[in-house]
Amino acid sequence: MMTPRQLRKTAKRTEDENLQFRTFLKIHADEDELDHQFLELLRELFADFDCCKCANCCRKFTTPLQDEEITSISAFLGMEKQDFIENYLTEGEEGPELAAPCRFLGDDGKCAIQDCKPKECRDFPYTDRPERLHSLFSILSYAEVCPVVFEMLERLKKIYRFRR
Image (cartoon, one colour):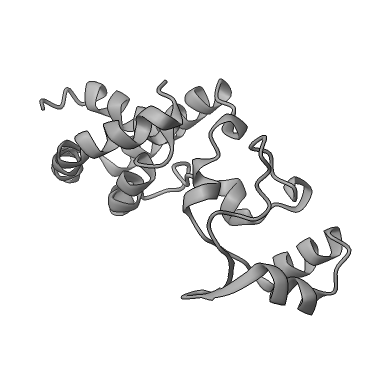
């Protein structure tokens, strides 16, 4: 699997191809089978991947927080909820969010709030969710950030015998 440094350049080079592959999948893929393939690839590829060595998602994406998560994180940090909101959150389209890069990302790639990490962070890259066929644009954008998602797409191209 490629390193995070290689990913940006390679992802840009394959951007048009990935858009063509998205169209190909929309026409040729069975929705349930594609969901199963994404799930299997997720399990296989993340089994040997240390996200802390990459952490691109923490550097590139904002993280919307639910009220319960704000309460949980502020308690974990030993802060008053309002102080946490004022010091760590910005107002996003969906409400309060952690800005990118995440201030809880350590130099070692580890999350300082791992024990109460927000659901959005725990669930990324969301390829284990159903109906992936209807969210392929988001998956293409994740492939520009996450080496595992990039590899998933490359393997799916082989599975579907997609010709470049």
